[in-house]
Image (cartoon, rainbow, N blue to C red; front, side, top):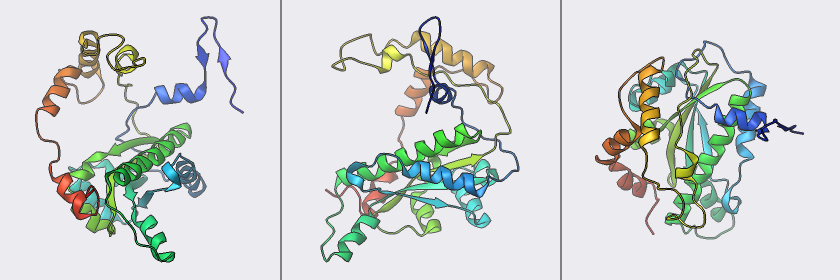
Length: 257
């Protein structure tokens, strides 16, 4: 049973909440394996995530083949920690398994719906985040690898992914060999609205947060730079964002209806 304490100021002391708020991405790992029992528990924790209509539409590919790891690192913008982490997992949105159930029962799988794409993608994200929280609770570090979507067709070939399945992202797991700072998040009065999007504080007043992020980037222990959050978002949103993904997803059977 989780024990929660109330401080004199009335705030909640909860180790799970504290853990979540302390999340950092780890990109340097010790040369140390994760014990098999712990690894299995992490996967089981992921499986315990909520799943729309019980589709359980996520498949995890554990990549232990060093040549495949090297190939995936290259496809993901040469991120070296894909190779050096104790474990590298690829989370796939998977409607193929449900389609196989139709074969078992003599019915025809009616796939290709946008809703099915959403269900499978959300399932993969929920499973992954459960694994992340479980991993960090055990002292492990993680780093999501969205850059696999730079080359999703090639990643699919490396992992032999079937139709109605696509790689959503990768995840590095391992024992941290660095202690990076926590990156400040947007103020709660910007992301939390009540009853409608338009009510509450002005959602475009980023000045204080921009200064906080500029200070974070300028003083963090690695990869220092001078940039505010709104500048970063403006730069990213003013250019194309993996335009190849739509055609790729259609070739895999998604987003046809």
